[in-house]
Image (tube, rainbow, N blue to C red; front, side):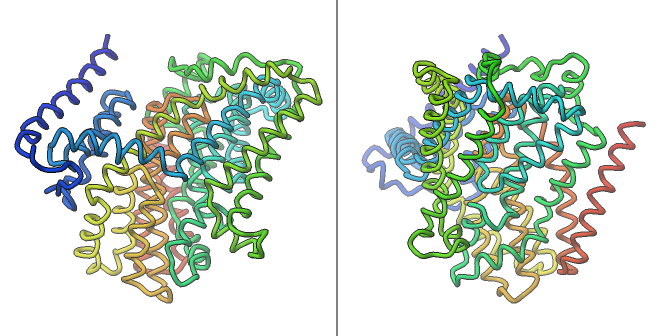
Length: 536
């Protein structure tokens, strides 16, 4: 009954927004929809659509309607409450354009193929076999969590690939160790973007390097790694939590349910997770390990191919110029074909069983795909209202005067922008050029500020319920999305608070040999204090 009431509230909200649009439609009847100049462009109102979507998602615990209301709100603001303009902007400029973008299509293709691969590995019994094998060697909850962290660190190529691969491999192990799916989703999410943003050979390094026009992007990225406090401290925190067993916030309840009752879902079991139970007990570990290994190699080859490696470019340059969408799409397609051939040769699955996994794998990814489409459309609404330009104007107008405190200020701005828009890469594109315009590359404080851009973007992306990486982590762990967001938020905010203080220190003393140890000491001190308070 409560869920119906919340959905009804969301529907009523849409109706109210459309009702507000009717007077605008009558007043602006003579204007063409695509020629409307919005009075909300480059104002604080440009951030309203994602704020509405995020607030509704946290209040109603329902993602789809919340995103839809945010998208409609963006369309109304853009068209100045013109009904025809709203429909055109939402459906054509938003949803249709997002689906027509070749990069987005490549990501969706990759997700579908990965869903099919996961279904094939489960049906072949590879996941169950790996779970049986790992349970004989990983006997503690700390060991299972540390293994998940280690695998997440090893798969540093791309955050999408990281989320779904680590999830499919470690789910059987975490389930055996009675680790809640919420905790597994946190470990996956915390080793996705935070690891990719400190890995020089990754799609994220390529994205950041592309924003530096003089060809020194990769060198700048490497210099910024020791100052990327949020990413480094997130890894420190995960290891501390795994070893000590410290849990707090909503996560503590989920972990208690998993340990004491064996309820790893805390009552919120997903349909995809239910499908995991049907596996082939005759499967072998190789049925899981080999497809995963092929997928890693094939995706790396696909990415350097897209960057021109086979046309004479060096490996580093090829990775810097790589198109992650094309590389992942090619790598996953080749892996799917080879996996089908492998299972056919081993006779692990019949041809019909393999073909049955195609629609089943697609269906398992439908929730993630749907949320991604809505999130991309919401980003299009925000961009069309000039949110990027508004933030740029605010930064240039006020933050430049606080030179020593600029890294901490940029970190906070990056967190807010990335949280509101759900994208790290878009935040890089806004703030890094601004930072480089204020500081030359030779200025040590400039490197700290660029790192603050990256760290803040990852932090906001990590916290945001409309972030594609957060969505992928939920899908990889097969955990309820809102549960994942609400349980990991206190952990992410703890690291964010320590990182903010660390950037104040780095702004005053821009030396990695001093700032990084201070940041790690602050993080460990905060966690020890938290553990003492919880025990008392």
